[in-house]
Length: 312
Image (cartoon, rainbow, N blue to C red; front, side, top):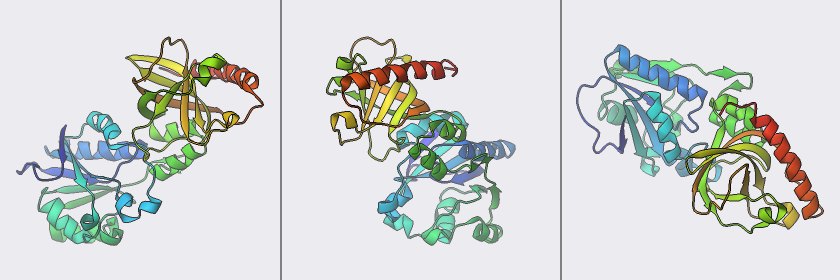
C-alpha cells in the first residue's frame, strides 16, 4: 500500500483509479464492505484502488464544538487499511478552504483533475463539499457529464440497525463494548503508554497499570469496570480495567487503571494496547479499601470466566 499525505507527490498516470472518500473512523464492518468493493472493482478493471480520507476529522474544522471523539486515531487506522488490500491511501489536510469548496469543484479539481477517477464508490449516506452537497443524488447527475462512473454501496445492517461510527460511539458511551465489537468486527481498543500512578492498586493487592492516552480526541467507553485483554512487551494478558474517576478516593480526573493477571514487575513507560470484551459493573464508591478490594476480587473472578470463553 502506498501512502500519501496531501496530493503534492501523488503520481500521475493512467492507473484507472477506483476511488472512495470518507473519514472511515473505526474501519467498522460497513467500512470494510465498502473497501472490499473498491478493491474488487479495481481488480476487475486492472486498476488502482484508492481511499481519499481527511485529517483532522472534518467536524474539527466545521463545528469543533460538536466534533466526535474518534474510534480510531490516524495512526491506528493505518494497520487496518494496510490489511484491506488498498493500493493507495491519500490523506488530505482538512482546513477551512477545503470545507468551503463546492462539491462540483472538489470533483473536477481533485477527483478528476488530480486523481483521474474513473469509478467513484461511495457509501449511501456519504456527503462532501460545502453544505454537504456532494451526495449520491447529485453525483448521479454529475457523473455522466464529468466522465466518471458512480457506484453507491448500501448500508450494512446489524440487529442494532445500520452500522455507523455514531452508533458505535453511542454503544461505547453506554458501556456496551460487546455490542460495539459486533459492529466493529473486533473488540474496541485503546493504546497508550503506561504512566506512574499513586500505587493504590498495589496496596490493595491488585497492582494496576495506568494508561495515558496519546490524544484527548480518542473515544473511550463509559465509566465502569471491564473485562479486557492487553498487549504489552510482546505478550498478551487478560485483566480488568476501571474506566472512571475512582470515587472511593475522591478522584476527579478520568483514569484508565488496568490490573493484568499473571504479570510481574512494573510497566512504566511501556506501550500498551487494550481490548474491551465486556462490562462487569458500573463504577461505584466504596466505604473503604477493604470493601473495594473484596469487590475487585469478585471482578477478577468474573473477568476470568468471561475471557476464558473468548478466542485470543
